[in-house]
Image 1 (cartoon, one colour):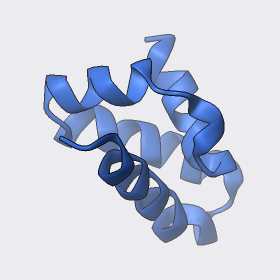
Image 2 (cartoon, one colour):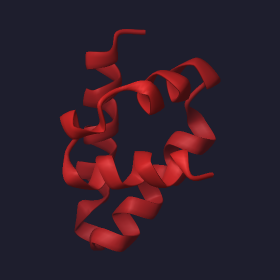
Image 3 (cartoon, one colour):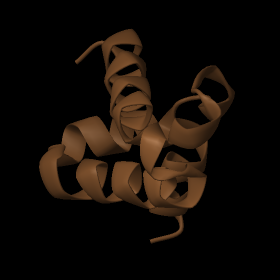
Image 4 (cartoon, helix red, strand yellow):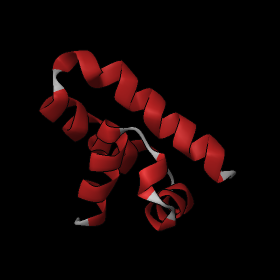
Length: 67
């Protein structure tokens, strides 16, 4: 899958959860990626430059990378 599409999807999830507050949005975005993205998608977003993501999506992917 195209990395630009994965970035867009991660940012879209983060945008949708942002009204819950930053901490909840980060956790929700991380959990969504963990639960619903296939291993190839997760590996690609983890290997990508996280600076290209929105702040919430970036924090969620960094949390995901820590396990």
